[in-house]
Each structure stands twice: as structure tokens, then as C-alpha cells.
Amino acid sequence: MPLLLTGRGFRQELERAGVLALYAPLEGGAETRLLRRLRAAGYRAQITSARGLGDPEAFLFQQHGVRPPHLGHQSVGRGAAVGEVQMAAPQLGHLLEGTAPVVLWLLEGQVLSQAELASLLEITRREPRLKIVVELGGARALRWQPLASVLAQTA
Image (cartoon, rainbow, N blue to C red; front, side, top):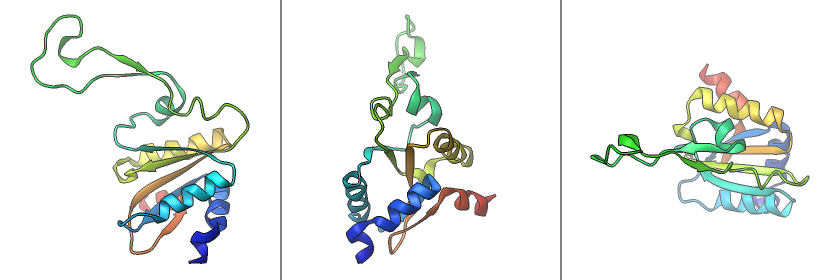
């Protein structure tokens, strides 16, 4: 288990690729150790679920509108059946202040489409301080690979 003791190989691969696809054992634990090692190396971290991500660019960097879930019959007043738009702050706005590198850890990344995964790659190319780890499923042993190679295999 020397891989999990330092996390150096994971961090170097993340810095090289920008976005990593991670496959972790379903019982958990390994990914939190890696995240702790990244934080110890000076990264600022944000963990969020990929479900409901929508447009990654707007969700991560811009103030964007969010509608509440539809709950059946509602008044047809001001909000109508879809509800009023509530404005949400960008998820990474506060983390990108300063010069520290930032890692975004996306849970349940298997729900993302190929286009959304490709946009994550583009985001890290435009913002070199941002690194993204996308959990794409389970595996018997912890493994990762650059997201670009995962996208090339499925194309």
C-alpha cells in the first residue's frame, strides 16, 4: 500500500492530465485518503455530486439560475408550474481566489454525458490551477487514468 501512503503518483498524474477518471472500491476510504494527501500538498478542495450539474461552465464559474423540483399541482401565480428561478452562486468562485491550486472532486460521474466530460477537459485547459477528479464507477482496486484516454476509448 505505499501508493496510498504518499499519494505522490496520483498527484503527479493529476497535475499532468488535468482531469482524472477514478475507479474506487465500493467500500470507500481510498479516495478520501487521496483527497487528504492533496490537501496536505496545498490544494484547496471541493467535493460535489455530478448529479444535477447541468452546464459545468455555468455551474462552476458563473452565477446561474436554479428552479425548484416540480412537485405536482402548484399555483399558476407568478412562478407558474415550474417555480421561480433562484440564483445560485458559482461553486468554485471562493476557491479560485488566491494562487493555491484547486481540485474539484466529482462523485457519481458516471451520470455525465460525453459532452459534459469533454467540457470538463476544456475547463481545465483554460484554468490551469483547476484539477478535476471524476469518479466514474467502482472497481476491485483503486485505479485511475486520464479522462482524455477514457473519452478516446468510447469515441
